Image (cartoon, rainbow, N blue to C red; front, side, top):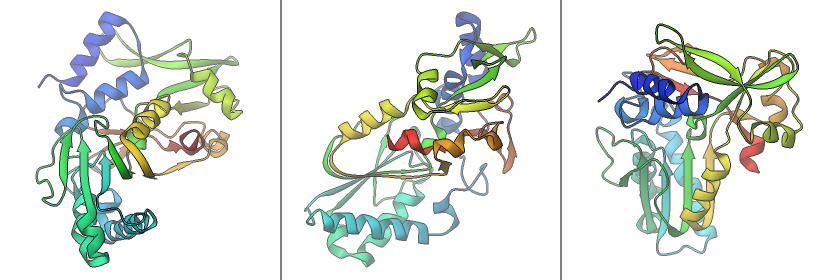
Length: 282
């Protein structure tokens, strides 16, 4: 595999400074060495934990809720559970393995499909697996279950300089290192903040996920009827863009250490942000 950092340098040299969303997308998902494509990111040997890895009770509780959704839908003979960003498959395994004890009829009806950009080392035998970056699936009814997926979606980064909203782009210095420079905001950035009634003060840094609408359209196309369950950490817009978070919510995880520098360990560290829930709900 080609080092994704070199891929990004080539892109910047040919196109000029890129948005942070483009940088984050390549760093995490590039087939030429993106973090989630090639690393075992989770657990003791990875860089961070998620809830399914801390205790199977998380998966059991999710399975109980899914069974209730199934009953509320008049217990159809086939009930699909689609999990994008399934990672190690631990949640898929816990849900499917405990479904029988929760409700044998639900277990017989459930068809669980895990979706991710890479295959796990050991895929759960009780779930199907699709290697993909989106949702290339269409089912009549069921649930789309997104656990800690939205926080890894590429985001634009902005700041305010001399009273003007500016976008933070990624450029290169003379030695080929990644540096930031300010530019005009990409289309949709200012409009998103205006729609939320947000006004940032000078020096305030913030993240904006302009991919939410496209993801919602894709999710709607994948599911005829049912539920979209999103489990993640975040804030309503008023709290997300509050002055107390003037440095933004971007976080990087490398070998269970935390930093706010996305330009080191490119392709070898997770890049994550908190989720702005107001826009997600809309």
